[in-house]
Amino acid sequence: MAFLLAGSLVLGGCGEKKEKAADSELPELVIGMDYFEPYSYQTSDGEYKGVDVELAEEALQRLGYQPKFENIVWEDKDELLADGTIDCLWSSYSMNGREDKYQWAGPYLYSRQMVVVKAESEIQTLQDLKGKRVAVQATTKAEDLFLHNIASDLPQMEQVNCFSTTNELYAALRKNYVDVIAGHEAMLGSLVQSGKGIYRMLEESPYKSELGIAFKKETHGELAADLTETLKEMQDEGVTKEIVTKYGLDADKILPGGERK
Image (cartoon, rainbow, N blue to C red; front, side, top):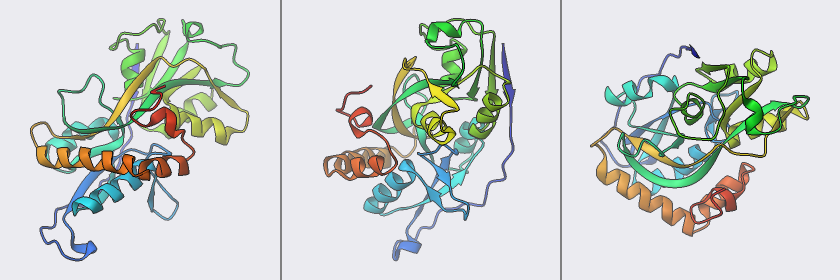
């Protein structure tokens, strides 16, 4: 049984400049992002930060574009792509199972889905999740996993609660509305670290995936190909490793060609 809690967000205006001169006049690429620390988030003064933000800024600068980041309600992402509100999705988005749904650039990183519980929980393994209540973010890989839309060894849960934002996800566990939360390793790792012993992450991963940049199907084909090549160049030059390490991630585990754990 799945429950969806939807939030609301007002998008700022966006457009595409055609001039190409100074940096401020480069053509814009509007990127839809979710608050997904350490990949994409905003500081208290509104500045965009994160692994994906810095990768986008570097890659697009090399290609003669400037990124315009837009925080979006993640479950509205396909509608926003379809109507041109955003040009692409770049926010730790998994390609697996969606290969034919979008025009992709990448993969540029690997990721793992993980499970977090409160430190005192008796849950130690994935099989201990049988009959428990889980919270996931709506329209993410974790949702598909726990609703069994993706084949896995996960047991049947008593309840799968789907939230719009990561903040709602964290609150559900903090207030004991659920027994566990599931999602991207880096996102949940940030919660565990900031919790200072309140939470812990299970050792097992129910799913590993490839991250890419998603454009509307049958659009931006040339740009997607150029972006894939540019991201490979950045990895070869050590730029990507420097960025992911800056945000506390293990480059050997998440860079293509690494351990793919």
